[in-house]
Image (cartoon, rainbow, N blue to C red; front, side):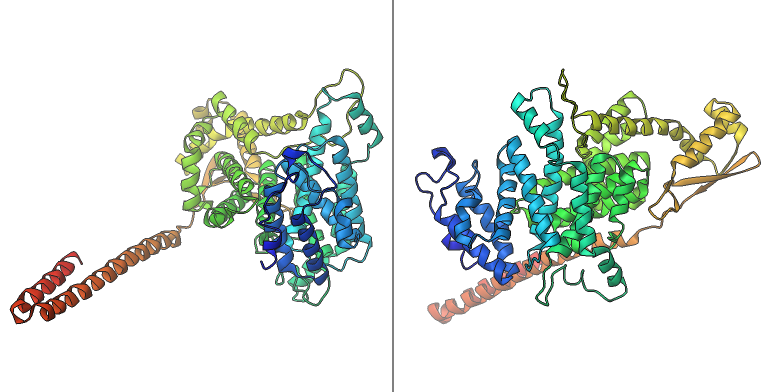
Length: 560
């Protein structure tokens, strides 16, 4: 951008780096220029320039001057922005985010960051905010707010090595990052923004929220509406961290994730939404829905990840990509509906987890260890939101929530062990008597009926609308003592095959055109060489020149 040269490419000067000691009151010229231009663009509602400075300039200045040090304090930059209260809150929000990303925050800094978020959200909720901010920044606010809450809960749960001073601070500021405070702020942003009503009106054609990506082109502000929108995703994430998957999915209901929306305008928002949506459905045994959504997002990342290589979120995109492949492997092992997965995603999945998925089908101790491994790698970092016990002896409990969720998940997997045998026999027969099947499975008939009822229960789930949906690729019904098997026949997907062949054909045609262009240019060169030979050598060399040209043409034709 036009002003980038004034602060992006400044050479370091003595005392301007962390190595020389951090001085919170020293403001380099690059930072002065940055905050002055950012402040001006915010006042002018120049969203494009704000986005460029936020995404590019802030990162480049951080890399150049503040790789392992905080930015200058808000008090030191306030005079350059007319001591504007709202801008200072925004600057502190970025200041703390940089601190969390590059350094390890102290307990006091964690508490100060909570206070800053409280002040910022209070201004948005109860003040008159006449700004337009980029969706990326607004998403990062909500995302970072939830992340810092999660980080604080993990930090607080490690009580074993806490100093007396830290314990005293925790007792004093017991409301900092309180779970009810976090949930109340997110819910208040949703309600105050009236985003649920806006999305409902949009379905009736009365609003253009999605069409404008949430921006207000009539001179108003997008901040409250878009923060309210992203807060619904934040609520989904918080409830997943708490293990309350029903409530999390309920919070996301106003957003139709089967369609493009504002959540897809920011890659981090898109991935976070589908990751937590898919994980919640996995834990609620809605395997088909989880598979369907993981497949879509993994295909999207596969096609677009090269465009985000320079993005600060690139490493996070790759990490979430790998985690969702692990969750997809779990989902398909518990509910083998491969027809829901695109071939491109399936090939990547088999390459990463093909061997493990084969072993997971056996439901022995090795299989349970693999389920444990993949779940532990791919699950969110669960939290215990309650305050710790300050009584001696102090113990760490930061892993308690994770262990509980893992225990519940593995219990569900073990219940699937009996079902694998039933499914094997049902795939072979179209009809079979209960007596015959009980003999094959080496159980008595009452036990078999219990197993069949369990199969029905475990392969069906209740969706968000209260409807019962089936995850089974094989279903059955019992008439008297006969089991009648109904196997779903997946529709053949000819489209994928033709698309792959079209891509191959286009590649071949491109190669042919390139060869043809090379040969045509060679023909022209050889003919011109023949004509030049005639001019230079006279009539005596005429035959030799033409012969050279013709032999070159024949050579090209032979290659074609």
